[in-house]
Length: 312
Image (cartoon, rainbow, N blue to C red):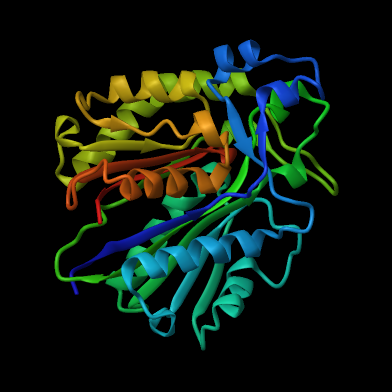
């Protein structure tokens, strides 16, 4: 096979919805303050006993069901996450066990907010190399486990959830070449460090880098896929902050493209943000099948990765 394609998508978010008004009873903040600075209105927070692999498994089952895919055919599970508590076993192995898979390759990848687009590229490359035929690519995060709920600069941002894609071999390449890289001098700009560490970031540094550098990098990802920005049907960026998403989408030059703004209702779910947002757009049939969509993740590391995919 010459390439791979996204067959189907699925997502899962916990039942509990934490509003800005409720947050205002926990820290010194307000609905107006949060919406004016990051655009978030609500976020989903997992229960204490709701595990990361449980959420990932829910999203994976929905993706398999949406594509009518028999789980027995999955031979590769790759999970993007930065919030796994245990060092071993990995989340991919636990998801495979939950799904009753027989002998898949199971890999976790930690590139924080850029994790899903890195994982998608790795799965695409494995399929094109003949090392896999059907892959589950999952972004899952339980950010609430690593949040300082007394810090209003970070606790207002985060949400929990998972999104999944089923990737399969295809005669024509429908997952474009990845453009990925990092900015090593900003590697500590977004971090969860040390035993018991909490999510922290240098927000101004991240904001300056994304607004100055990312538009050109995203356009280069389009060039690699042979797609002009104005041909894009949709843009799904990491759902970090509405003040980052909207200017970036405009500067990429995709006039008329649908821009995912799931951050408003889901908050920043790190590696889960892109698959959750894309799954919702596809579920609502807002993107025509086969239309080109730019996916672009950026965040901790400071790492980035993006590719143009065809909508399932």
